[in-house]
Length: 166
Image (cartoon, rainbow, N blue to C red; front, side, top):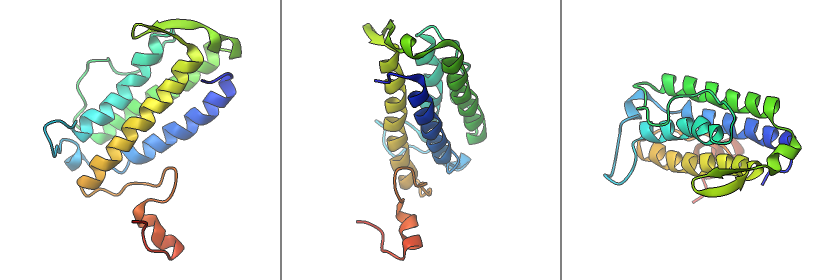
């Protein structure tokens, strides 16, 4: 749980930039590739990450800009990136404008439970990280490069003159 807005905003900027780095490695050709019937397409997973920003945060009383919760994914990765960038920036602006540290202790009913706003901010980031991890697996299966996020990706080990980790 976040207890101050500064810590959230610092982490949010880093995490949203990491998500953008992943999205920017996706091609339009890979968007609708689906290797298994029980797995989302890359497009649907990218869109889910994007629409959750305003869907979750607007339930707290903020007015985060973004696509409608049940809207379909756009046809191109460029449109998804544009929507994600706008929504991620809107999260930053809304938290900065409307919440102080004390507001993080306020409770709101989300998904049938009472969550403190600081918990919601933590859940927003964890949700994004969780699905970003799924997305990188789908990207690998589609032959796309995966960027380094929390450490070197397979291709980055060569920069250190080391073999890729097994």
